[in-house]
Image 1 (cartoon, helix red, strand yellow):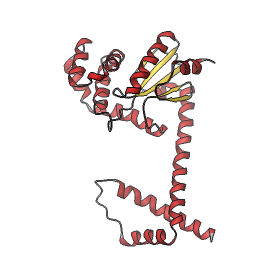
Image 2: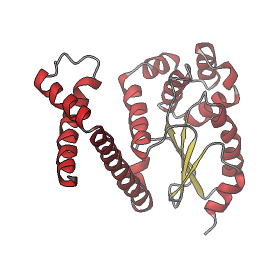
Image 3: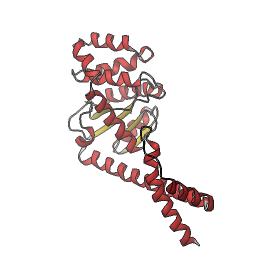
Length: 246
């Protein structure tokens, strides 16, 4: 009986994995074959436990893939950090022996709290390299993506970090007026700033960071990766100090 259920589970998993991409894409015009649909529904009705087992098997597979990706990520960060840093903004020594990666959202209140902590930490540790990765949570923070694009555009003129400071220090004022005001205060070329923040390159750069965050399994902000350790939320200063210690 167990062997039969395993076979059914395998069949349902195969069918399910071919079915999911079709029904999950809103623009897809494909129609599920009636025979395929009937087969799936018959299996579910006769053996509902198979559905549960197949979903659990799929989740386990996804978790294992994520675990392997995280291991690879941490390994690369230790041995070939530039592959992880890529084109992201950095501040601190180029030796990159102690790397603090920040996945953040300019409209996130916890990120603003963490900003103060990170600033204090970085002011005391010139041996640490800080790397910023964008992870705007647009579904709950309507200005997060616009702020991310504006900061990226400032970075194209070598002013990411002062723009970053200004956004977090004036988080309650996020909006078009502030983005242009900061750009003017930093003496940016406004025409270039406007072109860059509305460009495909800005979209691609931010999406690249977001995809990395999704592969790691990040669901909220801020998240920090420091010397191979992961910390979520408004991390205390003492936690960063401990992670830096050998």
